[in-house]
Length: 115
Image 1: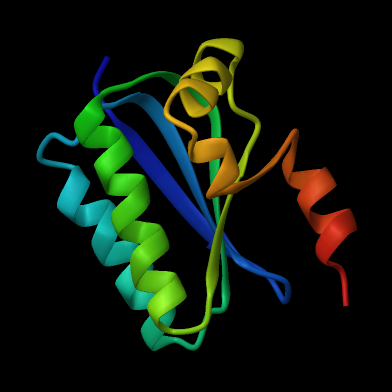
Image 2: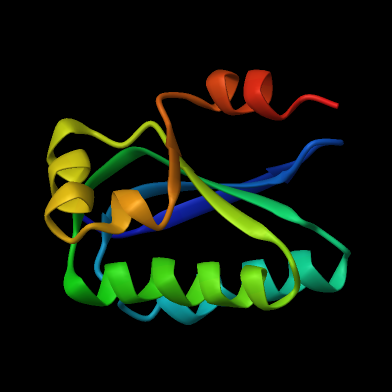
């Protein structure tokens, strides 16, 4: 399934909503660019919503780690929200659940990060 995405932001964070399979195809560099642009705009919190992601390949995992590295290099953080059961299992197997803070929903993220 082809990957598409939308972005938004509010006073708490920047948001990336991904739909499809996160496999690090030609859309991958665009996703990293979205994070780079957010950093340039002064973002410190970046949320990647995975509710519409069915599958993540090793390249997709690499993309998430690249995003996290970029944000942490600028004293920021990347949060993951709403992973499917399949994606949750992948995060546990790869131990990425220990690296990323994962929330069940955007609403849970906002509750935990409101000013």
